[in-house]
Amino acid sequence: MASATLSGNEVLRSRAGRVMPGGVSSPVRAFRAVHGEPPFIVRGAGAHVWDADGRRFIDLICSWGPLVAGHAHPAVVAAIAHQAERGTSYGMPSPLEAELAETIVDAFPSIEMVRFVSSGTEAAMSAIRLARAATGRDTVLKFAGGYHGHADALLAKAGSGIATLGLPDSAGVPFAAARDTLTVPYNDLAAARRTAAERDLAAIIVEPVAGNMGAVPPESGFLEGLRLLATECGALLIFDEVITGFRLARGGAQERLGIAADITCLGKIIGGGLPVGAYGARRELMRLVAPEGPVYQAGTLSGNPLAMAAGLATLGLLDAAAYERLEALGGRLARGLARAAQRSPIAARVQRVGSLLTAFFTDHPVRNEDDALATDRAAFARFHAAMFRRGVLLPPSALECFFVSLAHDEPILDEVVTAADEALAESAG
Ligand SMILES: *Cc1c(COP(=O)(O)O)cnc(C)c1O
Image: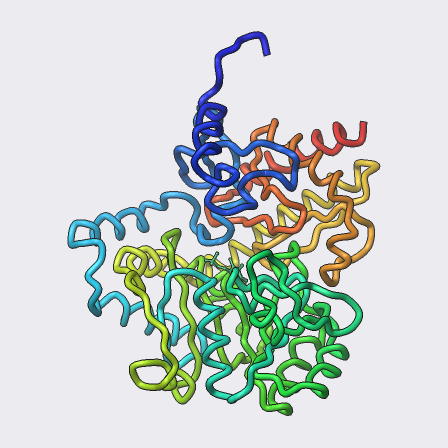
C-alpha cells in the first residue's frame, strides 16, 4: 500500500486487539480459519452489510442464523423500537414471553412448555441438566462435530470410529465435567447403539441437521434410529434446533423430517437477532424445572422483552410462503454454486437442506466430522478471500453453513454465483 494511513478497519482491529482477545467477542469472527482479517461491520440492511471502510458486502453469515428475514427488517425494527420505548428489561414476567412461548408450542408438537434463556449455550446446558434430573443418570451421548454451545460438559473431544470417552476439548474444562460425555461419529447409528449398550444414557443430544461442521444432512434412518434407541434405553432424545428451529420449517427439523424429540433446544431465529435461547419439552418434563420442580435454572435477562419482541416479529414473517421462498432461494444458490464448481477444475460439492448450505472443497459426500475435516480447507480459504474481494461475505470457516435469508433475492444470489465463477477461476489459476 502506498499510503501509510490506516483504514477504518485497521484502526478498529488494532484498538480491539489491544483490549479484547483476538479483537473479537467470539473466536470464529477473527477470520483465523481463512487466514484473513475481519471487517468491522457498521450497518446491515436486507442481504447486505457495510464495513468501517464503507465497503458493501452480500452477507451469507446473517449473524450465523438468526437473521432469516435479513438485516434490519422494518417489522423487526418497529417491534424493537415499540418495546424499547416501554422499557428494555423488567426482571418480572411480561406478556411477550407468554406470546412467544405459545407461538413455539403451536409450531412444535413435541413442546408443551418452554423456558427462555439468553443463548443457545444456556439452552443446551439446561436441557442436559433437565435430562439428567429426569432420568437420574449422568452420561450424555453426542456426535463428533455437533456443537451445542460452550458449556463444560458439551465441549468433549470429538473422536472417530468408536465412542471416545469424554476428554476436554478446551483448556480449562475439568476432566470430571467431560468424563460423562461420550462422542461417536454423526450418521453412525451402530456406534450410538454400541455406546447405549455399554452405558446408561441420560440423553442423546444431536443437531437433527448438522450445521456446525458445515451442512451435513442426517442419512435416512439415522434420526429414526436414534429416536427408537432413546426410547428403548430410557434416554431422552434432545434435538438441538438452535439453527434449524423455524428455519427448515416452522416446526424445525422435527416437522420437516417427521421425528419428535423429547427436549428441544432453540435460539437464533426465535430472538430475531437479539440474544435469546429456549428449551422446551412435554409438560411432565418441564414441570421438573424450578420453581415447579427441583431443576434449578435462572437468568436476569431471560425472557428479555426486546428479544421477545424481535423474535415474535420475526416469527410473524414466517408463513408457508416464506418457507417456500427460503427453499427456492437456497436451491437457486446451491445449483448456481454447483454449476460454478463444475465449470472450474476445482473439486467442490454443495450440500444443502433448505436455506442452509455449504460448499465443501472435496469430491466426496461429507457425512460426518472426519469427512468435513478431510476437505481442502486451504482451497476454501482461498475461495473465501477471493469472494471477499468481490464483495461477498462468506462464513470465515470451511466448517460452517452459508445462511440464506428472505432478503436474498434472485439477482443478489446470481451476483454471488458470478463472483463464485470468478473466484474459483482465480483460485484454480
Ligand atoms: C449457535 C449454536 C448453539 C449456541 O448458541 P449461542 O447462542 O451461540 O450460545 C448451540 N447449538 C447449535 C446447534 C448452534 O448452532
